Length: 331
Image: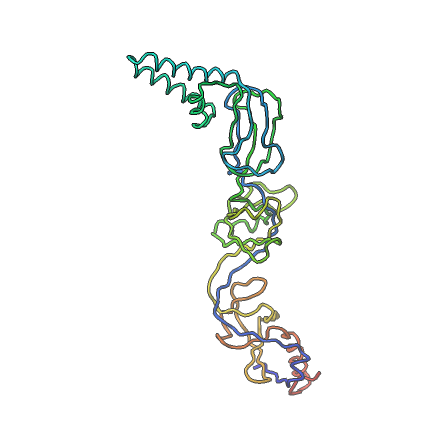
């Protein structure tokens, strides 16, 4: 049995610190660095429902916040003017020919639905009916909330039906993009626990879910793009922020000691404090481990005290003792 005895002064010089073997959760962990980006699945492309000229843009600055129902643009359109007049004419005919009320109702409702299909709101249609006036200049409103990410048109430009006008990204959920070695990608299919932190909010931790791993590998490298999704409550996290991801897998409860306590040689060992000033070097069997901790399968019992730092100093003293026959550690 390999044992060594130290007095208080020798323990101080050896910089001995202790920790207790305890049952606790442990998992294998990989740390990644990533960056936040818009979730492209939550990007809304606003297109023109009708041919016309963009008279005014109410939203035009990159990454400008947009609220649902907020005015986006005003469009001058002779086609819309014709449809509005069609509705007003149908309303006049409805009042004039009461005997064919059902037919007139159908004509009015059809004219209303065409305006709605062209992007007018129900409130705008009611206002046309109430005022009895048609206008070739119509304001269109945002169908969603988010941030303006692209504006491919300019004020005064003529657009056709279906032309893309705005790209608006919802930031209630974001992607965190990172890179992993191809040999590690199989972990993503094993439902790992992924936690994300940001320098801007060091005391907050976000839970992430893997959503994508690139099927192709970057040329000349063994890494692949991966994406994780986080919920962005309060929209605190902004696209482009640097993120730190902790990918935890094989999580379990086990007997755990600090990784700094183990010594690797012909066998794996750790120093155990058995009494005041007395330390025993034990062979141990280890299980899963991460950068901070290691699981002990055999050799140490729960509640025993191990040397967390200073283990190599004890190892050196033990070798010296074995060679000189000294009973203690001399500094």
